[in-house]
Image (cartoon, rainbow, N blue to C red; front, side, top):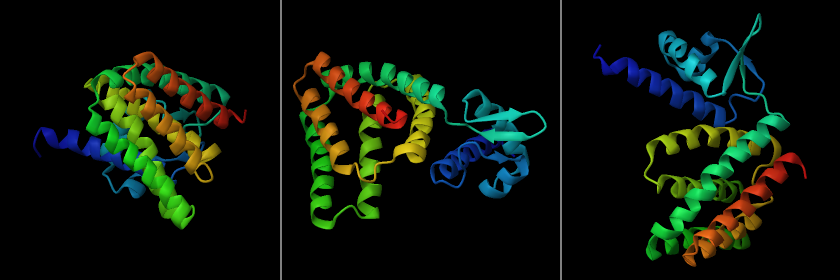
Length: 218
């Protein structure tokens, strides 16, 4: 085995775990053993054992004495913390994006969102439209963060994004909110297009506050 192989296995195990988590094959608060993770991810036990400390550090699982490993539990504190952290990152990233994104890049983002709205009008909120809307939703935020060109921020953001996506899946989701969310995004895109960093940051702040309030049931 090459020196890089253990690292590749750990990364594959992490990717498999997060994919199953986001695919609803693992649930918030669920208890699971290392051997169950082996069966689920189809990764060797050694890779899973090395994966566990990383998941604990990232807050995706915790070890409960005499009970085993528990998938992150969603409560009010976790929701507030995750959305506050998201706001700190995305507010500044959106301001920077307003300075750097090309007109062509913005036009492409606008077209993606307008197409989702048009599809809802043509097809209704089918599962495929909902799935595509969710991908478009996440995609905008990922693009804004990644445009910073900062690997540390991108990686940290991705971990928090997993938590946000679990919160949304468990408590809100985008079904029934496709058009309002796409319209909010279009408002953010318009603010970015103004090339006013303050206006862009304020639009993103309002959007994240709305998402947080939905998760909190406000």
